[in-house]
Image 1 (cartoon, helix red, strand yellow):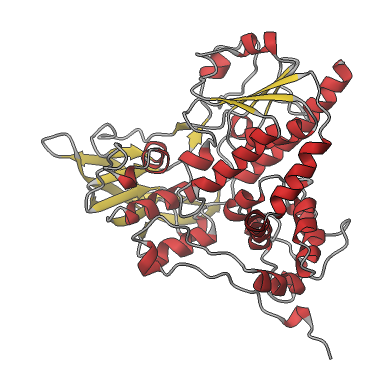
Image 2 (cartoon, helix red, strand yellow):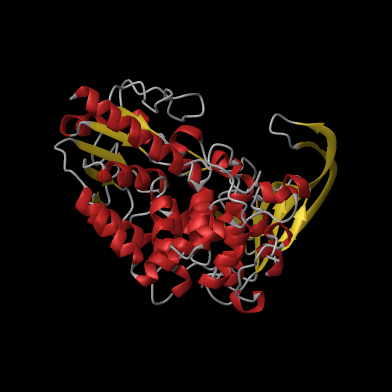
Length: 471
């Protein structure tokens, strides 16, 4: 008798031990090897494409059962080919996507046992193909099949939306130029996500693939200052705005300007992009001290907390709501707790207290309590109790979200934005200006990498249609 895959447990992926990883910035999760990936793939019941809930849950609609079947059979090249039809950055999405809220959420296997570990299988395909030369073979095939076009597309921003759009347009033969404000390509992938979750060398590898597809990158270009969209439209046939949401939200409370109070944006950029954790090899010091207080409980807060832990601090994550309303991925919360990070819930910051030198030394919080009512997002409403508590802090990191910057719409006459400052688009992601498209966090506010990639792919297809009709 054969083994019934429905009765098998989910195959775990090995990880660095918590007591070791808190002292380094090496990747925490090691991923599958071929044998364990095939064992996990065997568990999948391979739902027909038209019924597969995992495909419906994926923002870029990867044909998940098809690629998993190829993994089970050991045909990794075909598995990668299937993934690349919808997603050319699987090494990234396999690491940072919230699969538990998307493709894995309604997995059929979850109704009778353990859900399929789709994200780790996607990552395995990308990693295995890269290490064995399979990716190179497929990339060369793709390059040879491209029919070059004369039309030119400008992409503003090299984050997940911009890179995805660049890939899809380059595959269709367009001349693509990506304008990036920073000195390195990758956007939030390199400044916002720590190396222990997404190694920068992986992002660099993906960028090199795009260069080989013909994509040109122009760095240190602040669109709206170095060049404007009206100026780009004189040279390019279409423009895609993928500038992200890089403006951090601040707290309007006393002491916010004290030394040692960072936004998560600045803190993570210093460490991730400017390599502060390698000081003095890199000249970007970050002094965190002995105690770090994080304000917020999303994925960015977890990244900041786990980064501060690796810099040698005792770390406290504080959040004004309760446990059930923590918005970070379950895996990130689990890893943070494993690493000894303290969670202080139902605390709302009211003041940062400084010393005579103007540096933060304490954070004052009001204790909160939860109510039965829920708000429009489904979170429990809260109210203050009138009781207060203080936590000592050498460093504070505010991680309560980000919004889109204003520089692009302020320098682009006729570009419609909503009251939040996000760009208004139609069902094809075209803005109020013909030929100018937008996607990712620039149109929805801070969201996930894969949603931005979904926009990038959708915008690329819409730009292709627009340029074909225009021609």
